Length: 143
Image 1 (cartoon, rainbow, N blue to C red):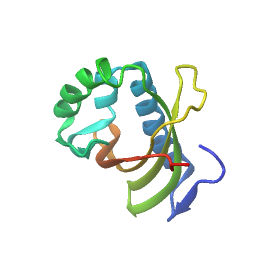
Image 2 (image 1 turned 120 degrees about the horizontal axis):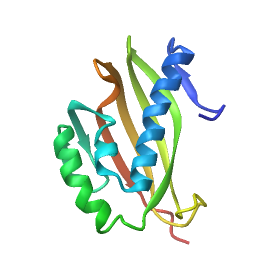
Image 3 (image 1 turned 30 degrees about the vertical axis):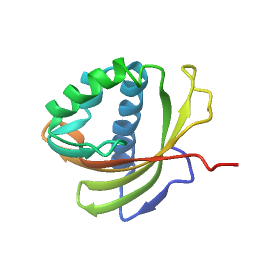
Image 4 (image 1 turned 180 degrees about the horizontal axis):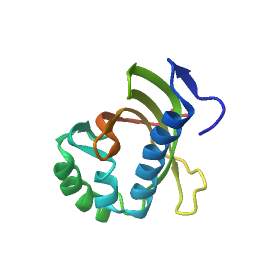
């Protein structure tokens, strides 16, 4: 996590690290094209709207949708996920704004659509998980 993260609320260092860890694990799963690991960052009962506007309800649906996408049109897509804001909504419930930047397989930034993502991450019996999220594709400005 960079030093320029906006933190709103009384969020402990431990919680910041845990929530950022979920985001970085999601990034790794996406870049590794590992649908099971990606879905594993979500709670069993979750709702996520992906960058194409498809709402996916539940961890199983996320894995089922992500696998084919990562083997097909996302197979050569990579990204860096940077936490830019943490907002405490309630104890152990954090809204997280993430800026996604396209990269090549080595992590070097490349031209292309970016992502503006909002995750709600909460402590669950099996650890910190995404309970809701919205991923918005942001096209680069035209010259």
